Length: 285
Image (cartoon, rainbow, N blue to C red; front, side):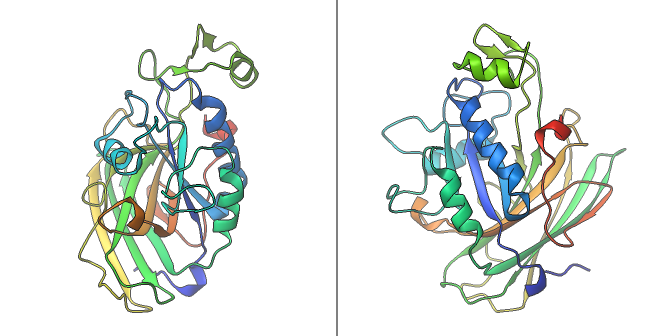
């Protein structure tokens, strides 16, 4: 059985970063986002979409679709972040922002009250590489009526590869030599560990499971979605996470805000029994 109750309804802000290996301005900004997330793991969940400035070997269909929905029409979308896919009018009139100043907003949002509890549990067979996941949403407070979807993604932390599509362009040599000594070749950081890479939606596409939660969700009533997925051989199954969230599913970018999120590391048997956090970069690599 799985439960998601008021006792586990901790508010965790969802940070979504947009970056690609072609984005030479991204590494220092990514470092700032990752550092904040590592320091606020119990109150934050992170997922990185490899889209917004060209593509690379980690670009997925879902990353492209997410970027196409939220990106502005006036400039490139990396480095950039979404914070619960919400609008912060003192920054802009759309739910995206440059990385500068994200930490103040993220801290503020992470202290909000959780309207919905999200529980994750599952199993993983490392021999067959079959992953089974169950996500349950339980609304604690009354929310604005509308479409609400459950989404859950397979995320891989500290993805490394060799050559084009994995080596990370970086215009700041001082930053690269400070944090990745000996790895800067020309303008590229070799063996760069890409943090919390969004690999695959397990919940029926980019925007998650629809028609499961009624327009006006009943309180203290579990809404559950399940998925089974065979993990590709090139994914490092020792660094996999499930990121799950409940979001409004309106027709445009202004009506897709995230109500709450949660994550858990994939093991042979895994479950959210409270709040979880990712491993810091030093331990992840």
